[in-house]
Image (cartoon, rainbow, N blue to C red; front, side, top):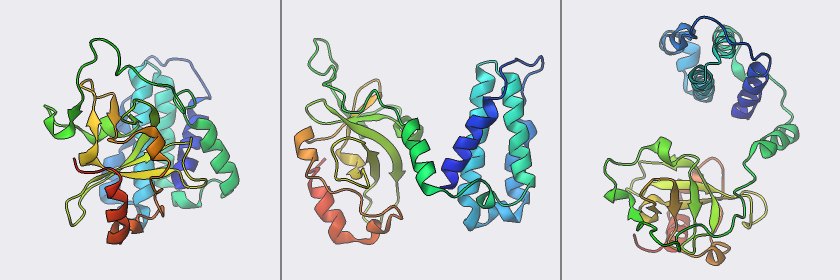
Amino acid sequence: MKTRQTIFMAALIVSGGVTQALADCQIADAGLEEAIQQNPRLRGPANSQSVRDLRSLRDAAFTLRSYGRHEDCERLLANIRELIAGPPMGSLGDNDEESADKQMADSEPKARRGASSGSRDKKGARPLMKIDQLTPGLRTDEMIGAEVRSSDDKIVGEVRNIVFGTKDGTDYAIVASGGFFTTGKDSIVVPIRSLKVTQDRSSFFLPIAKEVMKTVPVMPDQDYKWLSDQAWRVHNDAFFGKP
């Protein structure tokens, strides 16, 4: 919920002006990392989401700067400074869940959902690779937001999160889709070792066809309690077979 509020707030911030300032926007001026180190309120585990939101806003400022939108960048940095110095971020904004869900739904990419087959059958298509075959290795920022396709080259969603460090060494990609999954929560849990990737790292592929995806269980809870449910994980992981 806090992430939604922050992203929506960022959209309001940057929409206020388009004039380019004469001076470069200096990202370091926000003093975000220094504030995190010095402010006990930001260092506490209860505020980890607020820290992530602030860093997301800083990343947005960097993006504006890279496009020469220095005035908008400065405006966003000023808001970051105000949020650091102000009351806890969890107390800001409205708490209308239905309104927030609608706003987030409108922000989701629509063009890719339900997309038809890709280009794997085209002449010259380079072979897919296992993730552990990539050189250099794959970064998490290359996975988050990347599209995921079935073995028959039909898009099924995009990577929304990565889970590392399970006791049995199984890492997971959380893949969300708005199309054909069970009504309600629309994320599935995919063992990363089961994925293959195009050589340009633009798309990930599951080892099962799209039609079979209808039988894959959805992620049972948003608090990741399923990580401790070994029986559920064994059942889920069996859908994706051996790497």
